[in-house]
Image 1 (tube, helix red, strand yellow):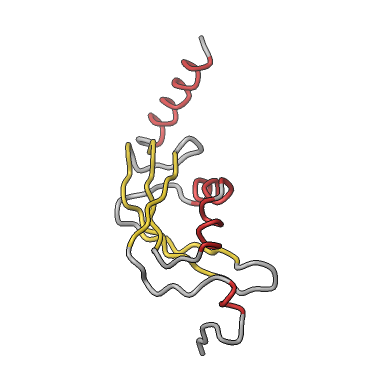
Image 2: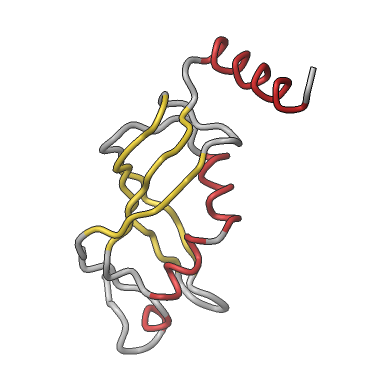
Length: 122
């Protein structure tokens, strides 16, 4: 058995036991997400985080995900939305996570979050 056929067999076993696995999940983030926020969610480690913390995805799902704003900062919750799922709904380590940009939503992020003129919420 070759490595490719072994991987295909392993994937088939996972699919058979849990349902169909997603080959690719397209997630969108708002156009007004800061450059720093985009850098954070585009990292391979954040994609791996999504694969580990989300066990399934369906078109239209909304995920609020924490992204730190750097040293000594506050948190930034980024509203992600599942735009498309190729294959089944289950997410595993082999599922590709890709991004699209959608309309702005008034997200307040970047270093401004931790400055005096940043957003104030009582």
